[in-house]
Length: 176
Ligand code: FES
Ligand code: FES
Image (tube, rainbow, N blue to C red):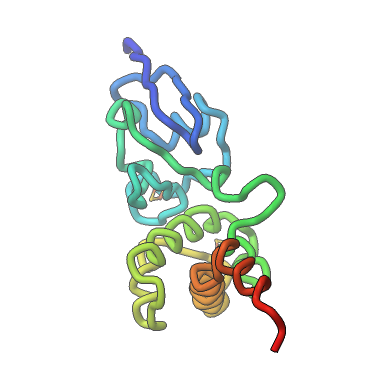
């Protein structure tokens, strides 16, 4: 089948690759772009292992053709950390044992990112609903839910941190 060039922004960088009309985005990400953090499970949209953020919303990449991503903005798990510094959601999963084998984890973390962008302070019920499209065969979900709560807390704290300019103004105040 003839291939077509697909150009998109991946984790902030312009990337191109070749895709047949039938190539799924999940395979394109792994095989053309070499980003193997996006996992493949069911290939029918049920498990969520292949979840990525496409144009700001989480999608199951096995449900999207690669050619449909032309010109898109794609975030995969490889784009979440800033160099050696883990994203607060990654830290929370690490600290609260939100993973065992790790197969579901990239999709679970990107789904959490989407959930917390929409709802920064979710209830446990909202967390369970938010991650219900992502299956985990190992953890029983308890630690994943704890991790999402902790991530919400960390991200809320970082949003509440005073900006450097406010901090420096405060430190300039004379001691009373
Ligand atoms: Fe895409 Fe399972 S591999 S949802
Ligand atoms: Fe193994 Fe979720 S940690 S499938």
